[in-house]
Image 1 (cartoon, rainbow, N blue to C red):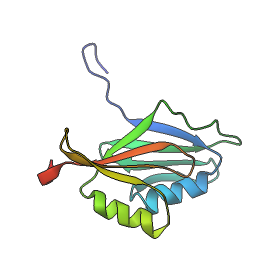
Image 2: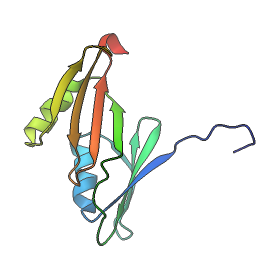
Image 3: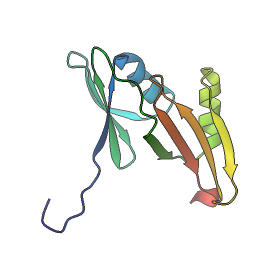
Image 4: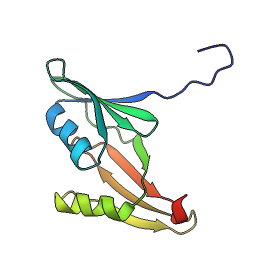
Length: 123
């Protein structure tokens, strides 16, 4: 990074005691692509658009923060709702009339808040 360069968010890291379950959930339900998976080290890096989500195994994870949520833009909130319903995972879907987009709120298996949104007419 040079003097005036704006930092580029590369990765968000989540520490979890349920590493295998979290990797599978983000891969199968949310459809993130696994780039790196090192089972012995308990490390996985998943592609989330232009950024990455790293899942790091720890013996005892701290509780999920209520201050932070991860926001993802998706092409279809309805498709995500179908995938979450198919695994009986709770969510709330609503139209944000004043902002003009659909959003779906849920949590991952560790309780981290996730927000997915879809712009009308393809953004």
